[in-house]
Image 1 (tube, rainbow, N blue to C red):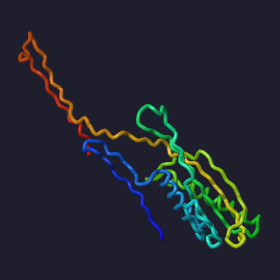
Image 2 (image 1 turned 90 degrees about the horizontal axis):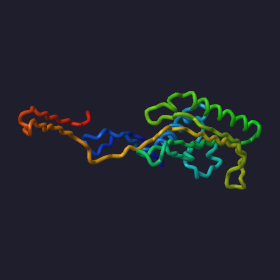
Image 3 (image 1 turned 180 degrees about the vertical axis):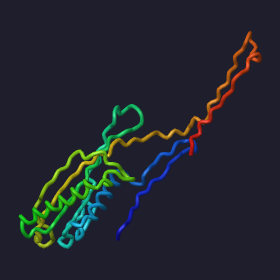
Length: 217
């Protein structure tokens, strides 16, 4: 069974005069995960691969060649003084990519992993929509690591030798802040002068002014 989760944006307002607050149905790291997965799936190199985002999946020989794309960690660091202003977080997301192929020849398998790495690097980093799109924004790539791991998979004495590329990419998603929602909205300011001459305010033309603070739709 497969599920198609389509992220959407919605306007949230507790009061008609409050400015709109844009929210997404999924967090920005999860939107980044989906964006990474969809772009790798579209690369010609991975046209024959099986994919998953479930870190606990047990890889069987029938699943190879396999590519897993995972959200490994979200790091939320205070932006400025943590006890001043609304909550603001400098947000980093670690994305893990695992590429597993059958290893019939160690040298050839390692070169194939390198080709997979090149396909991912060029495919993601030369695509400006990967870091600048309508769903999320990547401010920068702060670090990356790469490993080649060799092992075996299968239920019958681990019969299938495999080679795995493990690529971790840390993405800077910038500052994500959460403005407070204030229910007691200041709607109207009323100013009125009562300036007397010789104790008689009726001798002076007074000023009355009212400001309606309703936000434009």
